[in-house]
Length: 199
Image 1: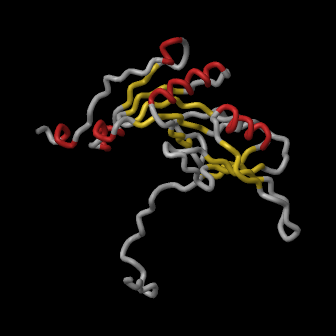
Image 2: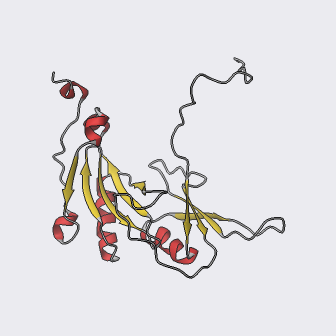
Image 3: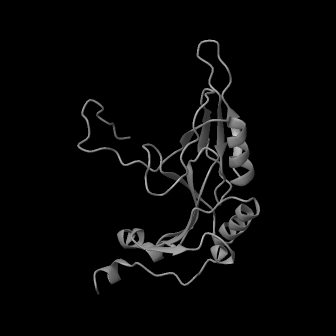
């Protein structure tokens, strides 16, 4: 087994595998809990228990499930703010209005699951802020009761977005209301590295 010299810093940061989880501050944890479990389908896996050696903190932890049925220790946590009277948060918009998180993206396993979730969200009266076919995902943008932006998506096949820069810069805006907001086309543009080089 190779040994690692921990006395010398590497020349560059270690590349992470990805984002492990995200914690959202919420005004009312019961309202937020219902949204993330009943509307977005997460499962609560844990809750922070009171301890005499720390100030009170109301926090719950949630997980989704991947295609193989694996569950992360948690993908999302909700942390309740101290009760305060005050103004409501501004409505979410993709164009930034405040520091902090712009939106979190939740991946569904495939197109069929995405279409089912679109129908479910519409049935529950959830407002679609944006419907966009990106070069690598098809997405709907909504917000939670605290104004946090959420992108619900499914990923297209990797060969469609081989040239990730070109795919990221592609966006087809779709209606957010009525029957057309539920349409999901399958004739997706292909962003190959070969085509982006002009060859």
